[in-house]
Length: 259
Image (cartoon, rainbow, N blue to C red; front, side, top):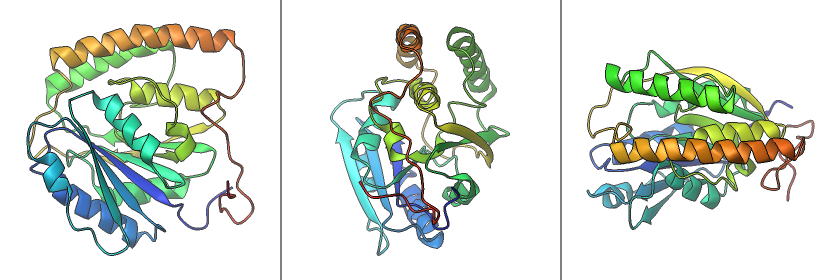
């Protein structure tokens, strides 16, 4: 089931107040997809109600062969909501989620592609995470609680560097930090295999992370308990594929069947 050529990829870049880096991230993302021979590549920037010029600076002239679309939320709706908008609007066979803060190298898509299959979710985990210590501690504490409440997920579930079939991103419900947890839990239930790959993580050069914002933290705790209820409901239903997902089986040449 190994693909012999890259799938058509939609890169989804969620952005909030990233005017200083967004144009460079887009250009590097486009260059990476072209270099790797991705057919019909597109980049979707979802500006989640930024207070700066993120949306305007995201409307850069893309290299020939790469389409860049900017979708702007009129108000800040949350990280998960931004991802859901991008996932629902993706046209490619696969979705490449990459945070737009410049802490990942788009060239590291090459680390995920060899592991991509139509029945897999390929998830990066951050090698030597380059964030302030307090942010790392907060993240570790919260996702330790998530594992206690939800059960096992994957290594570094919240890493914003993933590649997966488009269907996996459809029909998600959460609007906050737990969106990646929901994606993995639902994908695994639907029969997709999570695969983890180490990727470098770089320091921020501009902008400010919002993960420690009290409003963001409160939303995350609220979503955790709501998702716990949803998960219990899913378990009572027994095994089966959620309506939002279908596992696609690739033919021998690795090309996704039409439809």
